[in-house]
Amino acid sequence: MVTGSVKAKGATKGTTKSVGDAGEALALAHLLGAGLALVQRNYRVAAGPHARGGEIDLILRERDGTLVFAEVRARHSSAFGGAAASISATKQRSLVFAAQHFLRRYPAPPPCRFDVVAIDDGRIEWLKGAFDTS
View 1 (cartoon, rainbow, N blue to C red):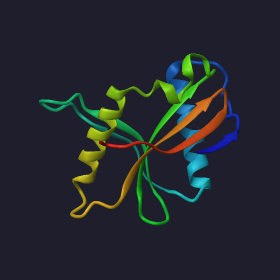
View 2: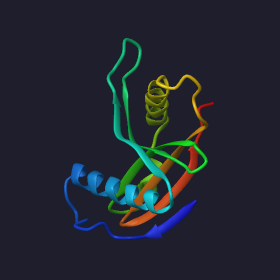
View 3: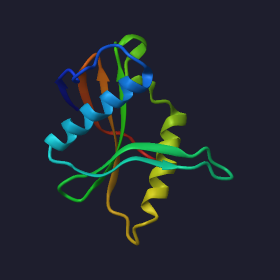
View 4: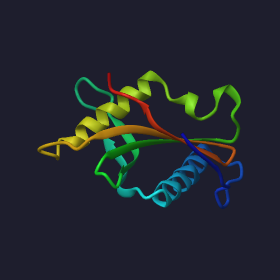
């Protein structure tokens, strides 16, 4: 777990969308600063016949080649368990579905992991390997 405390520029109380957008920008800057490289932002998969679809906030690559599927959650406070606690089993399944779809482009998929970047009142907590696909 990597933590930090940084306030997003203009991160005052606003709409859920504006808080999410500011959080995503802050998370991206944090991860890029840690040496990861951006592959894609906001990867979306439309709903299929048996799935609801999904979105991955950030897809990045570690220096060792590992693909990182990052979910960003931003909250104004850590009440009710905070940002990290807001990722349900349903959300995890949606992320896995979208990641599987993304990985279809690779004949031999690289190592992957699911990270969470939780931002509670400007404080960043980077949870590497936050959940697995089993």
